[in-house]
Length: 300
Image (cartoon, rainbow, N blue to C red; front, side, top):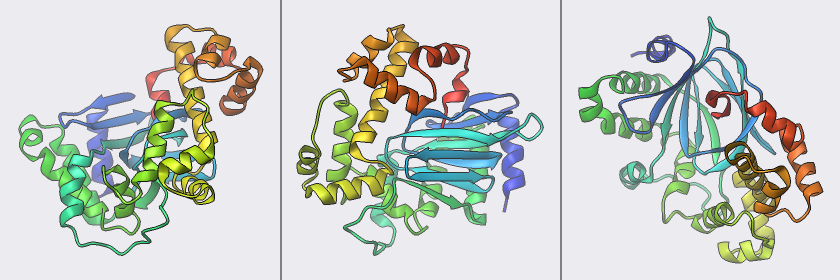
């Protein structure tokens, strides 16, 4: 079986310089960075990130993950998280194989694998960190090799994806986390409120309205939302608002006050205050800093 050394060697070949490298397998990419990065807030997509070298930190309020070589982070819900690479050099770079998660790949796995007996009432966290055991590491190395070869990617890509998903779902807690991606999962009501907040982040909403949407009492909804996402519904919405405001200012050249109004803030002072608290500097200064940054700085 191939181990972490082979994994690192393979990714070094796939990513000879800094950057994000797409592969021949859809949804699979390799990231290499030669230096630490400052913490950045982005929306984390449902993804598996396997680390071959270096160390990464990911946070969302009460949740904090620090993971490195031989570990992976699973994200099963779109979350506005803060991430930073904390250990990487030119000689010893951060190397990651990223696999986007798709419910269509999960359905045959979760339908045929032996059922587990988790707590069906209380959701687990949408982010979970685990070590890579020997069989899983071997599968991930093979996935990297397959993703570099046109014929293998065409004929074996879906098979190696299925093997990796089958292996990780055997880990306690992971199977439950993966069900959040399914259209009819047992916590669908809770996931529905997250999707609503993403689509209506600029709209005012009361906790009671979200709880009704999830078919829960207000107290149960608040507690389970925070356990799943690591933050409260209103702070979740705030993060979404500020990410979008940042995009409007950076990508469309919108002034700070207009961007704040566009994402739902009634007062420019409140917008500036919350923006500064989350990003570490006022909107104008932050946008000036970002204009000199690179795409890789925003990959979590």
